[in-house]
Length: 127
Image 1 (tube, rainbow, N blue to C red):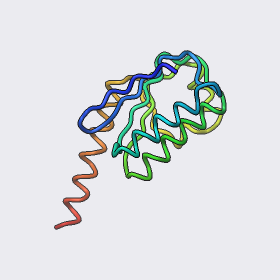
Image 2: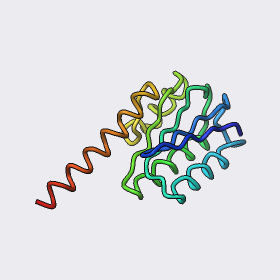
Image 3: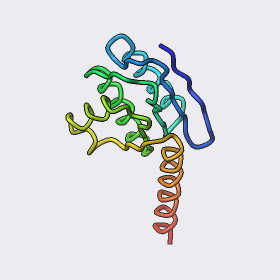
């Protein structure tokens, strides 16, 4: 699997360089998510701009990442979906469950916005 993990202060970007997210690499993708969240990350961006094909095992790995982020009260955001992958997610009705934005820049903005919103909620509860 060719994946690059870029750690920032408030999030990690996982960029998959494979054109296929299928059974041959889905286990490694899941392991990448599990390791990142286990190591303390709570916000992850999955950049799929190079992925042209995804199957059910690929969707499963995405759902694992999403669940791990939810368990940490964090964000798991997909970006750069190809038409095929976007259609598969829509047909599977996962677009109602997953956070999806078109670009990496928008994904970063969404993570930061979510963090600000959580902090504001926490501050208002203290008052």
